[in-house]
Image (cartoon, rainbow, N blue to C red; front, side, top):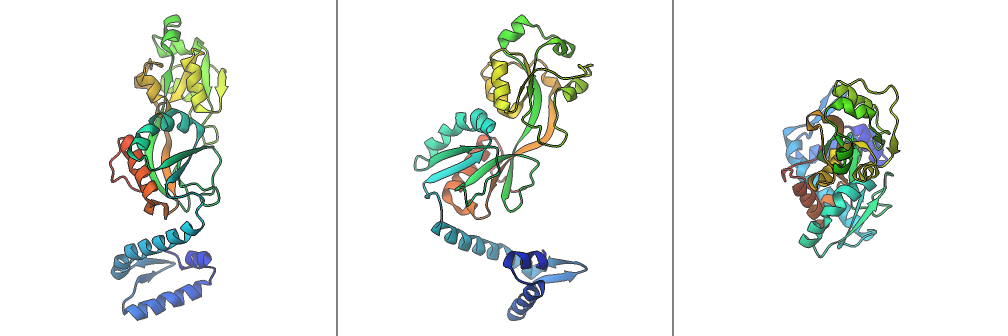
Length: 287
């Protein structure tokens, strides 16, 4: 919806783009854009033409990308963070491989931003606020923070009320520290109506799965992310003493991919699988 942005992408001038659009409109005999004050909008004819044209360009780009693809059609490379890979993806991936034995899956676990083409990545799972320019994104799983402890720890340290947490060894998950105003123990104490310590001290980890594993080992009380700890909660390795005091976060897991990736059967298969595995409707779309 911007001739200037189109000009930048095509390495042309805005006037050149405008001229080409007018030539196309003359050839078709109908306007495709409404020229508004400092903006443009698709006409009814433009709206009708857009989906098929977008699909055609996506297929053309995919055909060109295949000439320099780093991975063959039967290899799927998934980029994601180490904690999500360890606590959510890896334990469930066997079901995808059972469904699609023809696809070899490779997990690239890293927190660094990847260049999909340069790094040979097909699809990624990212945790954040949902701003991934140039990529298609599908909202997957939200997150909450909750107090978790091992059954053994609870046996030795009864946790009857939220106030009792103050005097127990705390496990600090700093995996969200790079985001603005990350929630943590101070937020939970305030949420629970408890006067927490002035300074939060404890065993700190910069990876969420390490904090969860420390709680499983009985090292203390963790304020952990439910998205990553759910399997350990379901198995009884961790117990949740205050389920009514979960702390919501504004951050979400997103499935991200280049615009043409959705046309690849292996990516389409993985997209359908992960959406189904998370219990989301199959029509869940970009956004």
